[in-house]
Image (cartoon, rainbow over all chains, first blue to last red; front, side, top):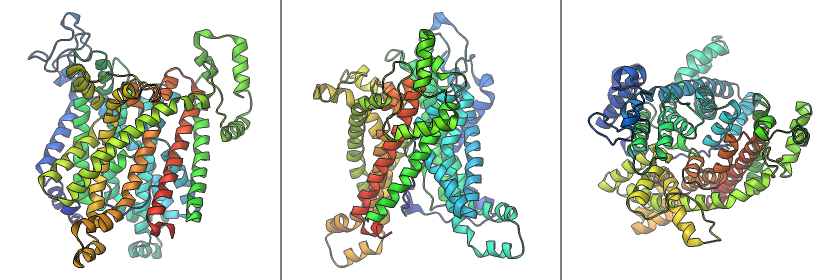
Amino acid sequence: MTQPATSVDPSGRPDEAVEPPEAGTRWALATALFDSPVTIAAAVFLLVILAMAAFGEALAPYGANEINVPEQLQPPSAAHLFGTDDLGRDVFSRVIIAARPSVMVSLVSVSLALVAGVSIGLVAGFYGKWVDAVGMRSMDVIFAFPVMLLAMAIVAMLGPGIVPAMLAIAVVYTPFFARITRASVLTVREETYIRAARSIGAGDLRLLRLHVLPNVMAAIIVQTSLSLAFAILTEAALSFLGLGVQPPTPSWGRMLFDGRGFLPDAWWMAVFPGAAIFLTVLALNLVGDAMRDALDPRQRSAIEARQGNL
Amino acid sequence: MIRYLLRRAVQALVVLVGAAVLVFFLLHLVPGDPVRAAMGTRFNPEAYEELIAAAGLDLPLHEQLIRYLSHAAVGDFGVSFRNGESVFDLVVSRMPATISLAVAALVIALFLSFPLGILSAMRRGTGVDHLARIGSQIGISVPDFWLGILLILLLTSTLHLLPPSGYVPLTEDPVEWLRHVIMPALTVGLISGSILTRFIRSATLESNDQDFARTARAKGLHESTVMKDHVLRNAMVPIITVAGIQLASLLGGVIVVEVLFAWPGLGRLVYDAVLARDYTVVQGAVLLVAAIFLVANLVVDALYALIDPRIRAR
């Protein structure tokens, strides 16, 4: 279903319209990006999550699957900051180590969606006519399903696991990139510099690569950071349902699911992994919104990406 | 206006056929033998042959596709591999739970977002505005299942106010229905409401910046008239669109929340079918949800064509 074209800027901050920085001045861009302490805090938090994903085992005080039944279901303490689960595993360590599958799934799936979506959007927008019709109608078909439902159907067909989860998330987020890219291409397609390049004999591929793509990059970068946030949410939901990351690999969503069975007494089993998901998504959204304000103030924000994503 | 809606309907129909083809091929990507898998330990060769023949799985692929599409067009989505129930009936039997949850959640979302969004736009830059913006940023980022668990911890474990999960049909016992629906509806409604609050705020701001709002103020209209008849009326189109899309996606079943609260709606149906590898049910339910989604979007289109005459002209 086509999203109706409204001229609303749902950024939540139309009052603080930031002028896009001059092209090529990276410093200006960086200052525009990090002008708020909230954005800086969010970016630092994301660095911590990345470090957890990269060096999780080395940072965690215990192993992810270090079972210690005598110490099961202990509340948070100095020895176990986030308490222990039903098998006596340290929840703090598991939260740290579980950053890797979450980060990996969202990075890989969003990269796949980006490559597929941007290619489809570029070609559809640039060539128009039937190429456009076929490309965008097939994106509409994917859009016809609520995100979680389609992701779940795809995982159902491929069987549960981390790779099917990646593919499923990639498929459901491809149309977002295709639409945004196509819309940007349509606005630059008739620009003078494109005609000029064409008139001196530049081929289609060269035009797309050197002239069209750089001009739609801002929109794509913003979409990427926001999609990463929702990919984390979708992955966590799939793992929560037992369809994503499989034990013994720890994952935030799965830990929440396991913790649900021990409510209300062992509340820490569910509360801390959930907080990790929430804070990561929040940080990605904040950075994404800041990027939009810095790069492309007219563009839609996080909310568009969460349409139909409940 | 009629022509506009007709064109949208034809577009939706094309997309729906595409969705049916996609769903059909998804089933055929399943490695192994779905019928055998669904029958599990109750496997017996005669029933197996019967199911294969009934589902037309012995036909060539293109004939199966045509068969599937033509049957689906008249509401026949086959039978469950597991217990032989009609997929269509299964989906219909889950609709009341999903619809009642979706409506309850939307009511909460609207009650939350309208005052907050408008107030936050009118008092831009004040404390109310900041609170509303922080609140909606949190609501947009929070995982629904985590919010649900926090609500259970608060309302069930600590305050002992509500049952942790379960479903009572509205027609059976409205009070018990209400007690059971509050938490899942709050979970979904708070998140939906956050999304809507942001939209309503920016749509109101946008509309308030237009020339017509300035003109209305310049000719001395009362501020409340300016807001009601000029600013909000023009802000309504994008707001209705977004609220409609929200409702459409809620009607598709909020899978995780339904699982968390043992709410027997559409999302729960698909989830159970996925776990049981009951592919005809997955296929049929997913397709029907897409159809609901498309129809709901069409209704939204019709609604705002009614509200905004400029759209009819397109």
